[in-house]
Image (cartoon, rainbow, N blue to C red; front, side, top):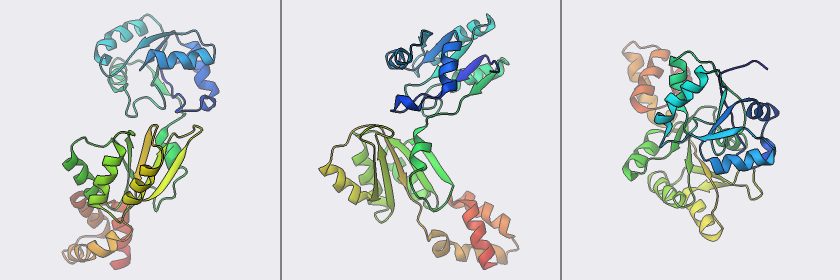
Length: 270
C-alpha cells in the first residue's frame, strides 16, 4: 500500500458491511483518526476491533485543530479523516484541513466508498446524467423557491431531515406542482425506502407512513422546457450570427439551463 500523510476515509451510511477492506486497513495503519463525533466513530472501530486513537474534528473546532494536525504530520504521524457516515467533505467537515495540507505540501488521498448521493442516484431512473447537488437546501424559503425555479432543466439533488422534509415538499409543490420528485430514506438500512411522485403525492404518503432517517431527495428536470421555451431565443441568437456552441453557453449562463441540452436543441433547429 502506497503511503500518504493524510487519508480521507468513507464510512458506511447505515450498513457496517459496506465498509471496504482498504478502509479498514487504513484505519488500523494510521496513528490518529480525526472524526466528527467520537462516540459514533468508536462504535464502528469497536465493531472491527480497531484500537487507533481518535481526536474530534468537526465544524466547530476544525480551524483550531489545523495547527495541531500539521504538527503531528511534521513529526511523521499519519492521519485519517472520517465523518459520522459517508464521505468526508460531502456536506461534512474537512475542507479547511485539506486546504492547509495542500498549502504545506503534505500528501493527501481519498478512498472510494459509501456516499448517500451515489447510492441514491444509482437506483433512481433519470432523463440525463447531469444534476445539481445543493447539499442541504437553504433555510430561507424564498432562496429555496428561487433555486427550484432556476434549475428546471437539470435534476436537483439535495439532503434533508425528517423534521423538515414535509416543509420542503410544500415549497416544491407551490413552485412546480407537476414535477416528479423522488425521496430516499434510510438508505442501506432495514427500512430503506424510495418514494416517487409529485410533491403533493409524497406529502400524502408520508402523512400516512412513518418518516424517519436521513433523507436524499431528487427534483426531476422539466422534460420539455428547452423545446417549449427556448426555440425563439436560439433562433434569435442564430440570426445575430452566433454559432450553436456559443448559443448554448450564452443561454446556459443567462437562464441556468444545462448547456448540453441547449446545444442538442440548437443542432435540431440550426
